[in-house]
Length: 401
Image 1 (tube, rainbow, N blue to C red):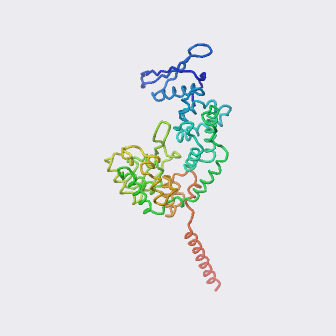
Image 2: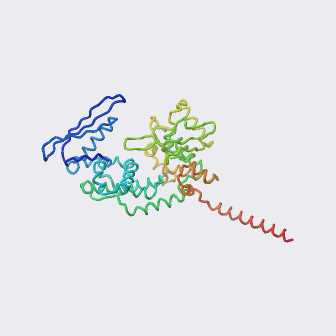
Image 3: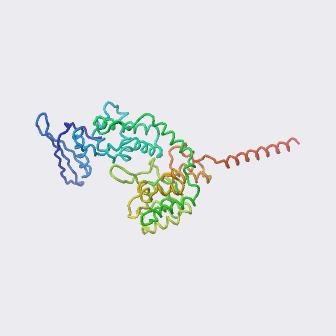
């Protein structure tokens, strides 16, 4: 949240940043000055920051706050910048116990997902896609509700500033959308690829459509499908995380998008976990390790220019939407590679408590969604029950005779 600095609306700010060397490293003092339209005085405010980008961001937020309502700059300001500048006003009247989860939703979900968009670009469709993404990432109902609540308050202020004609963020009614996504997740088989051959065909087709036919795209797709990994976890994997003796992958970080760009952080749930590497992916893992000369700090998977991989990068570089449609998987998303791996593991008979650890699920209920038996398993269960009853009947006859 922006600092509580009362600025007259529509004033011009004079800004400067001074580098101040110190014993523990350089610091940066950011200062803003303005002319008070009532008194004619020239007050100023300053803050000291550890890095130059932090100091520049502070000045940018104050500029946006001073310009609101009178300057066309707000039409092109990002949601993050605009939201920070009006947050005090948007959050007025809230108690601390409500403010904390609201601001958590703003920092952890709204800003990383849509903070880069200009305020007038926020539409109902943008909101729907954001909510779908949060639900797919297993955010709970209260988490989504709190996130929408703070977003709605910011957009209501944008409406009052006449940046948008209406508020596209509705706190009510989204539960139906949540239920639709949950119903879909209750049947993971509908989102999973049938077998490894289907996964290989998809990977080859994605490589074929990519610029330069970069083989790395196919490798990361196969890796994600066979390990049930999120794309951020595959991107964050380092060579030292792979044990080629036991063929285990220690998942302990993920690459994620933030307002400042891509960063590596702890896995979802902040818990490291072990994932087995099956025979189908071991050759490609060895190829990737040799590609970086077995450097333990190197990323196992990168883009063709060495950059970090995100779901958007994979989608755009491989023409994902066109390829999956031609393959007959119109609704397949990158995250469905995780559903594919978990469904295969459940079909293979991996115990649910072990599957939960491999998946990194916080709740056993989430894992059990992958345990839906097919019709053959129902038939087998019936046959087993019949055989059991027949055996008990025969034993009973022998006892009577």
